[in-house]
Picture 1 (cartoon, rainbow, N blue to C red):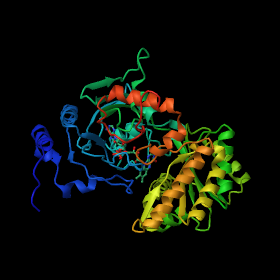
Picture 2: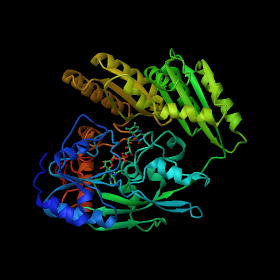
Picture 3: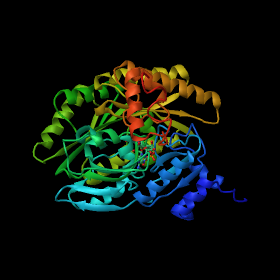
Length: 467
Ligand SMILES: Cc1cc2nc3c(=O)[nH]c(=O)nc-3n(C[C@H](O)[C@H](O)[C@H](O)COP(=O)(O)OP(=O)(O)OC[C@H]3O[C@@H](n4cnc5c(N)ncnc54)[C@H](O)[C@@H]3O)c2cc1C
């Protein structure tokens, strides 16, 4: 194929970063037309791979001069279309900024570049007695910059909190190319920049460096696999455990459809006729864990648990977690395409929402299987379909809209942890009043006056004054 003529912007990007850091041939751009939300696509103008904050600054300034938008991207595991290019867009890949710059055990933080994969930090910390607590199920691929930009959760955030609770400082490039550095020592005498920038989905700044909190490894764990005959019983047990004052490190739910896929993939020995399985983990000092495990088992039995397995050793615990964390991957065995939805409801509404999800699936003729960070009230219905069938795709969208609206009706929200991206944007006006949205637009304008940073995500466009 003949190379295309380079636009002035691409020429300048190449001159600034070097030709090996810039992609602009149409065939090279195809992988960047979408992220893990595959139902919307748009080919970017170019993709760049900066290696330093200074190079990110250059890219932002050049894009600003040429009127191109800038889409930060880590591993591209966004399930909400957060990395979808819009118009003349340059995708800024942070994946070559992947160094763990410092591990400071005495002050309990690590300094990382934004493109470090979550699991790479865990590996760098192995044996130190500390870890980075947020553990999204995508942790083998997703980057710490992406985790911060989406304020990612994960199975263990029930006890340990989401990403914002573990970011102590950051370095970020704003929409005009200026660099903001905050932390790592908390200074109450200023705005909560971290609270604002973490979760901003690349719309306020490009995060280039993070100071993250290191959490001591728990002295011990107990991990249980509890089998239920009904989803209602499993979710009833979840609410009851928390209501009794026990905060497990994790309480994960898999329903019958997921159990079948996981069992076929990993042969753990899950009963295929069970309607729901909970993976419950408690951690902390060894003394007291057995008593707490017994208490949890008692509550589960009260909710008609039919089988309770206590992981016998570290190997069995590891295998259980592998099943849970690879559950979504195993879904590929069930259908050619799927959308992982993401909603949150008050924990006590879990039985209701899971019943409604099943009814909505039936009404629209869409097969839905469920994983859930149940302890947090997070539901992840996975809608199975074949994207080659346009009518089926439309039914999937209709079912998604309905089940998310139901989450709002239950007093919850349309995203538990995956972010708003483009996918959930239409729901923002149901969640927020016009004045709230106008305030968000004003904040965005302050960080990015030209509106070049990740347009069309998180905050719906409109008037900044009154919405
Ligand atoms: C199988 C699977 C399981 C998942 N499980 C979980 C889970 O348990 N918990 C959870 O929270 N999420 C989960 N996710 C969603 C996703 O992995 C998270 O949102 C993750 O934090 C995204 O990281 P990333 O590096 O892939 O970011 P991307 O997908 O590349 O980007 C996500 C968003 O962040 C912005 N962004 C990325 N990097 C930067 C940066 N350096 N500066 C500014 N903005 C940036 C992008 O513009 C985009 O808006 C899962 C996804 C998959 C596919």
